[in-house]
Image (cartoon, rainbow, N blue to C red):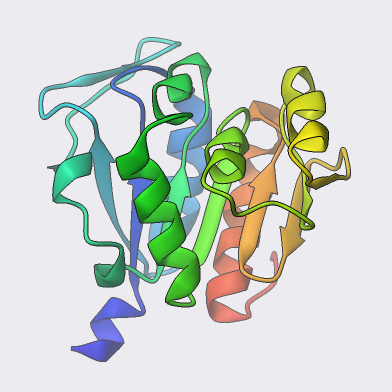
Length: 178
């Protein structure tokens, strides 16, 4: 059973206006590398991406047990603001870190990690519109497309979605980008 847990990732999408490619591209890369992906959102019905993707989450955020996964990933897009001040999302992120799981966030979703108290003194990146938010919150903003500090991986947005996916796999398995 423990071996199965090392191969299960959780991706959290906003119920409305998640960024389609920031979800689809890392998910495909994880799955291609043998990692099962469970998708959570704030609602149980179909979530809708900015570009029109509709996806039915496997579970709701309130059902998540971070310990069941080897990795937790927050997907960006304007809708991810719904989790910026969400205590359930913060608890999931903190549980991932405290139990040694890989934690990822892309686009503006790194603000969730910041507000959960996880980025102070850490190297991190975010979509340029929120750079000052990270800096003011005590993160060491790097401006890179993908930044890794230990098991926390942040990424700047849709253009970096593939590299973000590869960085997640590398953090989990040690396999570098092909």
